[in-house]
Image (tube, rainbow, N blue to C red):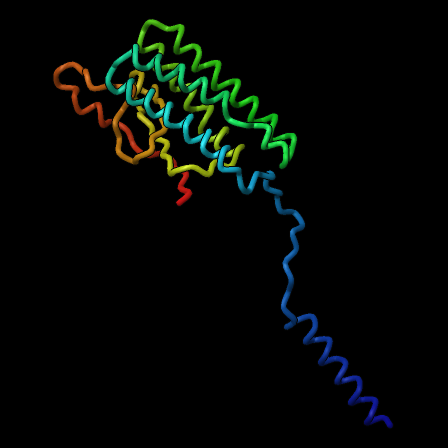
Length: 204
């Protein structure tokens, strides 16, 4: 009988050692930060509206490259109208917070785009364009969970002088600087390509 009890005790001890020492551990989510909820898939009309708005933005950026203030304002007006046409109500299907955040983003972007229309000096217009860019990327794109064509955030470290950087968004990684423009003084033509890709959103 003693021998039998001893065998049982040894077997229980061996099982206990296996359970605590060798059994695979399961990770828990305790302590991990939750990521914000985001829309997983937009309608075709939503994505088309965002793409049309971005086309107007890119056209405005290209007009700055040409130092063409009249064309800048023309595309700024188009940009504002297309910004208003984005069906933000679709975001309500996800969370009220996302909808309200996107709506606030749009209002801020539009306010600075409207300021471009009020300016007569191209440098001031470029300051407003930089503000439009900074409010779009990353805040607006992350809030709506951007699903359009690949876009690139490009930075010029001296857009407004030494240590005064500015950003712009492009549909290409090629650096063509809207803050310097094509009409630079002799010897500074290479400033048109001053800048580097800072970030990107690639969806395909």
